[in-house]
Image (cartoon, rainbow, N blue to C red):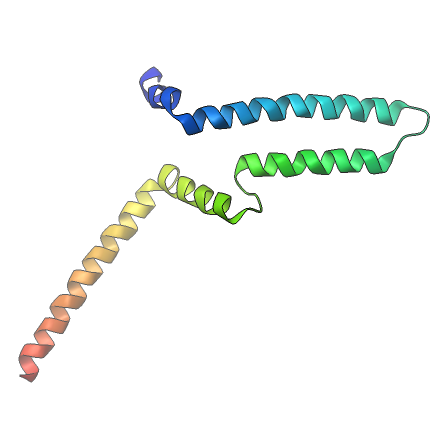
Length: 115
């Protein structure tokens, strides 16, 4: 297991994500404290609570990789394809290669018969 985790220790992107997750965890604690203080107070401000929770949700969604930014979505799709679905990508590539070779072979035979 340690050998598998070794590349992650030197990867800058991994450390960036870990730092962002730590900041988000701290922010979630702050939002939770504010939520408790606000709701347990004499006059709870539901709009402020809703705004804090929506902001926290948006940051969590962005960190998860399903955010609104197009570049982030493309990056997330690429990362998911080559990390979670690598076998399917390789099989699709092999299938496309075989289909291309077959199409070229069929097209080449038809030309010889016509000429």
